[in-house]
Image (cartoon, rainbow, N blue to C red; front, side, top):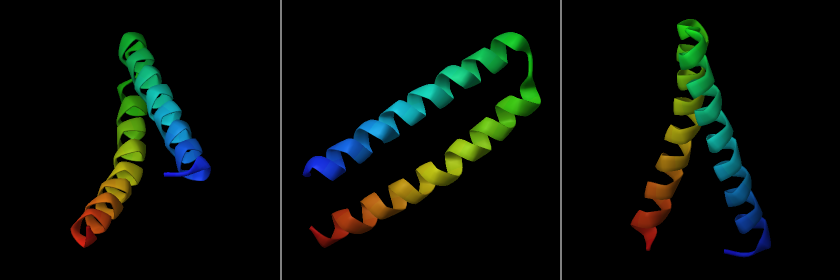
Length: 60
């Protein structure tokens, strides 16, 4: 994948881990509105990543 691809993947994994921990904190604190906003904010980029992955996979 190369250095830049590995770095991007590491940043993505760290970012997703942060969002999951933040969502857990919102559940514990009872802040459901922020939880919904975080879920929507996470679904949009993940759907773009999955779309690009599937598009590249079809070429192979």
